[in-house]
Image (cartoon, rainbow, N blue to C red; front, side, top):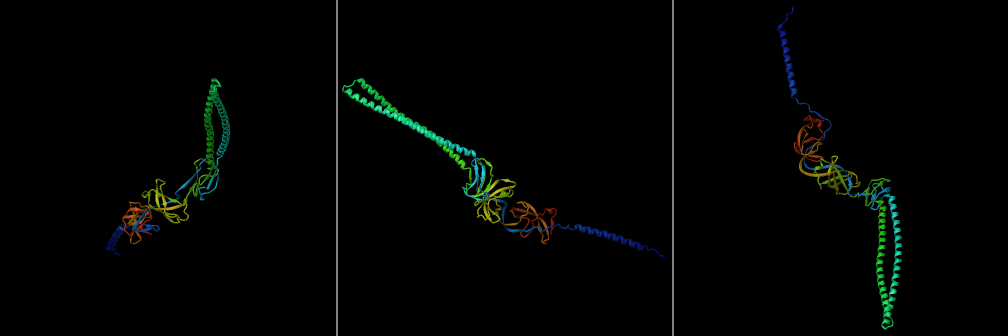
Length: 416
C-alpha cells in the first residue's frame, strides 16, 4: 500500500508560492518600465513645407492686387438738356478732340432758335422803317430851316435898303424900324432852327441806337442758342481712347450729366489694394514693381488713400518705365512695394501666422531628419515671404513652415 509523502506536498506548495511572487515582481518591473517610456510621437500627414534658416540681406515689402487706370480721365458731359438720338462709337475706339460721340435732340431749343431769328428779322424791318421816317422828318426840318434862312436874308436885305434910303431922307423912321425888327426876328429863327437841327440829330441817333441795341441783343441771344444747338453734337474733347459710355440711345439727359469717359492710354498708373494691416509702413516715394504678366514696370508711390475700404487701402503707383504690350486701362496687375532693406540678418520663410515683433513656435527638424521638436522663436520684422529671426534659431536650422495647428498638443512630431 502507498504511503503519502508529506515533504513532497510541502515542496510543491513552496514552489507555487515562489512562482507567484516571481510573476508579480516581473509584472511590476514591466509596468514600471512601460511607465518610464515616452509616448510615441504623432506623425504629420502629408509632406510639410520645410525651409532652412539663412543669414543674409532681407527685403521688406508688401504686395497687393490692383488695376491700371489712366492718370487723366476726361469726363464728357451733356452741356445742355436733350435726348440721345445717335451713338457713333463704342468703348475702346480711338478718338480725337473733334470726334463726334453722340447726337442729341432738343425740339424746344430748335423752336427758340427759330423764334429768335424771326424776332431779329422783325426788328431789322422796324429799324429800316424808323430810319426812313426819321430821315424824312429830318429833310422836312432842313427845308423849314432853309426857308427861314432865306426869309432872314430877304429881310436883312430889305432892312439895309431902308437904312440907306433913310440916310438920304427917302423913307420914314417907322418903315426902317419895321424892317429892322423883321430882320432880327428872322435871325433869331435861324439860330433856333440850327439848335433844333442839332437836337434832332441827337434824338435821331438815340432812337436808331436803341433799335440797334435791341437787334444786337437779339443776335447775341441767337448766337447763344445756336451754340447750345451745336453743343447737342457731343464731341470727345481730347485725343485718346473712349473708355466708357454712361448713357444709352433714347435716354433723356440734363445739363451736366456725364455721357462718356475719354482717357489717354499712354499715361497710366497702378491702383493697388493693400491690406490695411500691412499699409501702415507705406510712405510716399517708396519704390514699387508692377507685374502686368507681360513684364514688370518700376514705379513710385504717389498717393495713399487716407481711408480703408473693406479691409484694404488704395495706393497709387506712378509707372516710371515703358508700358509693355497689352497694357491698357482696367488691366489686372500684381504690385510689390519695397518698404526697407535689412543687411546681414538671420531669416527664414514666413509662416502664414507670423506677425512682426512677436514670439511664435516652430517645429525644428532634428538631426535624424525624421522628427521635429517645438521651439520658441522671437520674430523681428516681416515681409511678404520672409521673417527676421531674433532668437530661437540659427543659420542652418531647418524648420517646418506649414500650418501645424493640428499638433498644438505635442512638442515633438514625426515627419512622414
